[in-house]
Image (tube, rainbow, N blue to C red; front, side, top):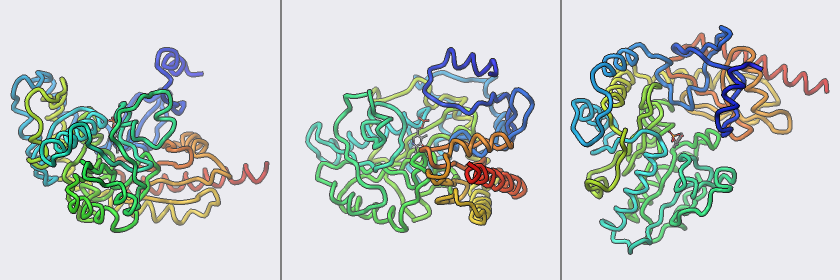
Length: 405
Ligand SMILES: *Cc1c(COP(=O)(O)O)cnc(C)c1O
């Protein structure tokens, strides 16, 4: 086995099962391994690399800002944080932002905001606030977040869990309505479930959730850590249904595929529950992250990456639908956010990913059965054609092997 894989396996906790490839370089939609093999990245680090690897404009900003000022903590003001947050608020229609680093931290921030808002604004009795999330959700890996996961493996062995969470069935409005009580602070939802297998809810679901939340004075909090910033063909996935959430969570692509940058955004009346000392992060909002985040947003707008995602996503979906393979059980997706579900009776998503790797495509299975196809939003038509050819070949190869055995 490759000695670098051995070394990483020896010293790194075994909390992932990586594909057996050692990456040493990335540029645009491509990655290279330590033997010089080139791959098309259809994974984009779980949608964190929407701008392409080592985007030259972002690399330039990193180099300039790194030489100027990096970490000072929020004990001081900087020249970079204000412009970054102004831009992200302008683009998303939110009033205020609280910068963090990872998605899970921004989700925690949203949960804390919702609870405090329930007590101080809505008038819920102390410690009685409830937050409703959805079955099949993914919001990160902290103790509070896994407390409302419906995935047994994410929870097993990590109890006891914090209380105050309920699970509605994703895509089912009535199930949400039944769980709302006078103590409900917020409904936390991914507009399209990512880690759950790229699951798109029925048309009108999110809009109806918004109306229901308004009616009961419940905050609608959209976790767009993965769906946000162009991934689904709009700047925010909420825009597909003209939904304006009360709180919004961004992460992943916000750091331009270079740094961890996340945030919770909200209206003034929600965010104002935070006062100095309530909540914070040593690294959140640091000038290096803010400079990269601002440039990432500028590129997104100037290159119209959401429109690229919509056009190339349609093109890729169309091509996938033309593949005639019994292994494909379902193709789901919107923009460059696509999942191909493999019939578990005929093969595993893992095997598809391993075979794709051998022909130069990097992807990753989610939930054992779904092959994720979510390249950087900068991918071109000819690169998609190249990928479709190989995906078709891999699936027919697997079918031949299956029929021969
Ligand atoms: C990835 C993800 C998170 C967690 O982000 P981390 O940066 O891994 O903590 C939260 N919510 C959604 C929807 C995600 O896809």
